[in-house]
Image (cartoon, rainbow, N blue to C red; front, side):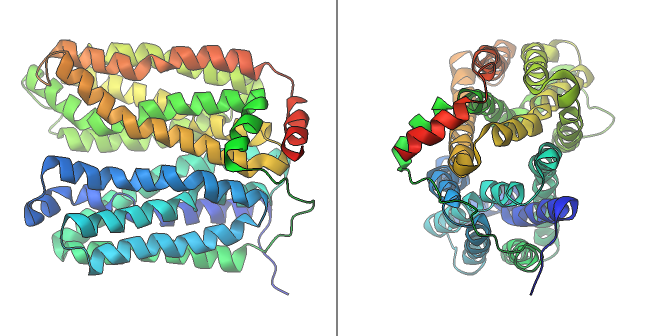
Length: 416
């Protein structure tokens, strides 16, 4: 009989699988200049192709994650790796313009929706409770390596061969991840009868669990900041470089942004280790308070120098990533086992939903406040990113103080 890995080894396998599954995540944005020129895409069309991946994710993740309360999350994960691979393969073989690109990106988004949170659910169902916070933090944080690797792989292959080959190679990541899970994670039979609950009713049930609702609110603020800054980081550093009239050690804004992005991985894993010492809610609130300060300060940093702007952007990104692992670990710990899939599904949907709109909102504020050449506009944009931290702090304090007994009430409500 085949036996799967247990404990830390299984967590390591799932972290590696997560990195592999992201092989195609950034292939399109990495090759956007080439594809936009080759296909004659307008800026609106190019942006829509980039956003449809997240739209596919947000539309699919509540269903694909919530059904893991009824069936083994491993099965959802395995099917979804094939769907994600098909998205990259479709782009590589058939895409020859706007509509083909939409199909390929949407398929990958749906596939990734069945990978990211269902993978976390599959892992947490199979490891000891005391290992879950650290394993969850690593799982959430190390996806940054997958993102960086996706950018690098796409650019390198397209530069030496073709963009179609870059998408073709990206199909291998999810397929290899699927094989790892197939052979190294044993199937699991639910130990108890699953709670049957409709999709819309799940919102009421999950938010009845006040601690879990607090972590969901925190993740909404987190995704709002992260996706907004990722979309506008290079543009802001370019503006700061123009105001300073020089570079930062010869590094271009895109290179600076890449270095900053990798630094966020370290802060996310490291800060979660302090959760037991200071209390998870206290830690997250402190991180968000620091993010609020750094975010607002970053908007004015262009007045000083490019180095100052770079350091503050780096500090801001590090603080916003520092609570990623703690938030996810808190949501897993606060959710009842019977409703963990539904909790993570809503957690992911609302978080990525906020991240879907943040870049657009940032751009609207920039336009309204004077345009991308206005320092005042950049200050307003960064304030927009940072201020949700203040709301999240209040909600985390109020909801996180509720007793875990609320979980039991949520389960009874679901079953009624």
